[in-house]
Length: 465
Image (cartoon, rainbow, N blue to C red):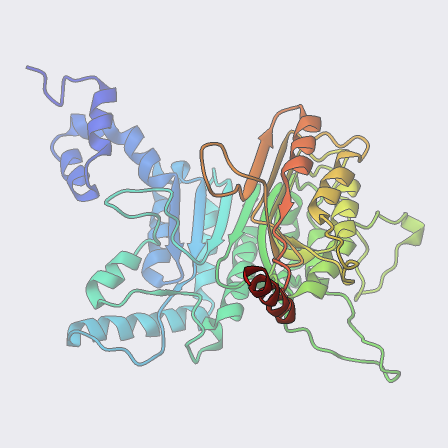
């Protein structure tokens, strides 16, 4: 009769894939042959992509993995999440759980205030030879399931088990500036980039995926002290995914009342000027900051000036080229049609993938009475007529017009209207045509005058008599 030692490796891996992590560990400890047979699958399953947080134990685990002769070579994707202890009144189940939680809070506070997190990240990155992707998150992803759970930071489930209190993401309920919401994430972003630079590690992909609050513009500041370390990282970066929030600008003025710093996202403009090899750029905005977001996109869509025409104004960085940009994704913003058309037109010679997600097209002036324009139809028509625009992938979804709902007609076999459409292939002409035909704005029902209803009721009475 077949046993675990004689069945094909594919079957052994299939059986192991359904085991809880604890049972899988027990299976690997049964004998050296099983451990050796499962090693490649096990290391790929558990050590290709790992999520950590800014606690001493979690970062020490990352360092320990980087020191392992085999696991360090498997680890290609490192995520640093914003799990943190809170400084708020909490109710603990017993003295032990209270002691563990308060101790953890103090340790994290010390780690951040002394900059130990940056030193530990630098040490780990130095040994991760095959690192290709570094990410920052303020959530646990659910696209990986084991033991009924998705991705979590190393050590976070242990904290919950020992204290009964789950760690929060990017909390603002703390007295420590190092651990406050926007500052915390911006500090994390800067430190991760600096640690990569000091470690001479240049992963091509950098992902900032934030649900709670985007990076402030100061996160992209490159002081002279850190620039020599960070610039090589940015220069070799090909994929950059960002969540930004252009808020909190100081309204300094000159003596004549003119604003000193008129440009939203000044630091990110300088930052993107250091990323000439980007092929994939995603920017999700804070939707309520309409003017700032539009100002940034207007700048991004401007043509690159000639060398003789470039200015050296620190407050007004010159537009950038991004000559290799193939994939552009925009989300969570309100813009006029012209801004979008101008931006796509600039990158038309290289652009292959375009995504417009949770985007609102708006106009400042109200349409004439009785006229119901369809801004999205106009946008699709104008984009389809851009010369040399040869997209192979297009995604549009969850969009609005002047904050009115927009859909793409009924879906096949479903009652609810389609909220998104996606296309891959070469026949973009047909897809542009389908978009223009299907896109529909859900205009509100016209108001009914109460006096008209009364007149109708009187007529009905007279007809009845």
